[in-house]
Amino acid sequence: MIDAPGLLVAAKELDAADSLAGYRDRFLPAEGVRAYLDGNSLGRPLRATAENLQDFVAGQWGGRLIRGWDEEWLDLPGRIGDELGEVALGAAAGQCIVADSTTVLLYKLARAAVAARPGRSEILLDADNFPTDRYVLEGVARECGLTLRWVAADYAGGVTAEAVADAVGPQTALAVFSHVAYRSGYLADAAAINTVVHDAGGLVLWDLCHSAGAVPAQLDAEGTDYAVGCSYKYLNGGPGAPAWAYVAARHQADFSQPIQGWLGSRNPFGMEQGYVPAEGIRRLVSGTPPILGMLAMRDMIALIREAGMDAVRTKSQALTDYAVTAVDALLAPHGVVLASPRDPDRRGSHITIDHPKFQAATAALWERGIIPDYRNPDGIRLGLSPLSTSFVETFTGIEAILGEL
Image (cartoon, helix red, strand yellow):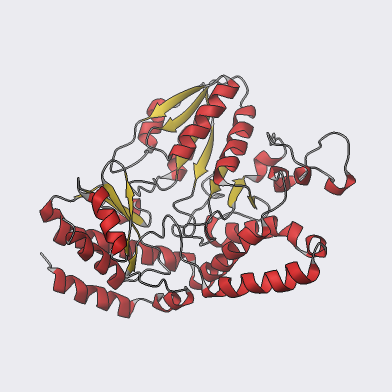
C-alpha cells in the first residue's frame, strides 16, 4: 500500500496535471490555514467578490440609492436564478429564483406541493436527511394534518429508488430528499427516484445544498418538480447568503404561495387590495430581495461557467478518489472507517470518515490550521471544493488527522 511520501508525490503530480489548478489563485487566502477542507459548509471568498462588493457599496448603493431598484436590483433574483439554472442545474430560464433562506424556501415549496395533491395524506422523508429538512416537514405535516412516512437509508449511503419504491403509495403527496446526503456524501439517483414517485402520483422536492456548484444537476431532463439549495457552500455566496429555488414550469400556474408578500404579487407597486400572484417564478418571492447577499453568488456562478461544470465534476471526483486512497493508506490501519460510498459516481464532493476520537481531534486540528468539520456521532467530513482545493492540501489535512490518532 502506498505510504505518506508516496501519497505526497502523487498529490503533487495530480496538482501539476490539474487543468483547474489556476483557479485557486482567484480565492482570497486565509492566514494561518494550511488545509481548508470545509468548502461543503462555507466556501472561500473570491478576490473578485471583495472588489465587487466594495464597488457596489460605493457606486450602486451609494451612488444610485433607491434608483437602483428600478434600474436593476428588482430583476436580480430572477436573472441570477436563470444564470444558476443554466450553468449548474440543467434548468431552462424562468424556473429558478434567488430568495429567502433554505429553510423558508423548503417550507414554501413543501406547502405548495402538498396543496397541489389534495386528498393525499403522506409525505416521504428519509430519517438521515439534514435536520432542517426533517424539522420543516414535521411542521408542514402537523399544519396540514399529514403523516410523515420515513424511508430507510444506509448509514454510509443514502436513499435509493428501491427504498422509495417500498415506501411510496397512493397516499403519497410529496417526497423530500437530498441530492447529496449531508453526512455520507451519497449522490442519489434523482431521475430514478422521480420516476418512482411520479408513477405513484406524487411530487418530489430535492434539496441540492450539498451538490449545487460541485455536482451537475439535470433538473429539467430528470423531471424534477421542485428543488431548493443554499449558496454559501460550493456557490461561495458567503455567510448567510440567500438560497435559491426551482419550480418546474408545469407547476407554476397553480403554485400556491403560503407566504404572500407584496413583491410576489401581480402588481407590487399598484398596492392593490387583495393578493393576486405574479405570473411565473416571481410568485415565489415574498419580500425584498437580499441584493448584497446574492452578489458573491453571482461571481461564483461566473467562475463555474468559465471553468465548465463538467470539468468541476471531474476534479471533484478526482479529489474524493485521492482522499479515499489516502484515508485507506494512512488512517484505516488506526481504526478509521470510511462512511461514504466508494463508487465515485455515487459520491458528491465530500467524504465522511469515522473514529471515536474525532470530536476532540477536530478542535485540535483547527488550532493547527487544518479545517475539516465534525458531524455526530463520530465523523469528520472532508469537503473538497473543486475550484479552491488542491490535492496537496487534501494530503496535508489527512496527514494531520493521522497525528491526532
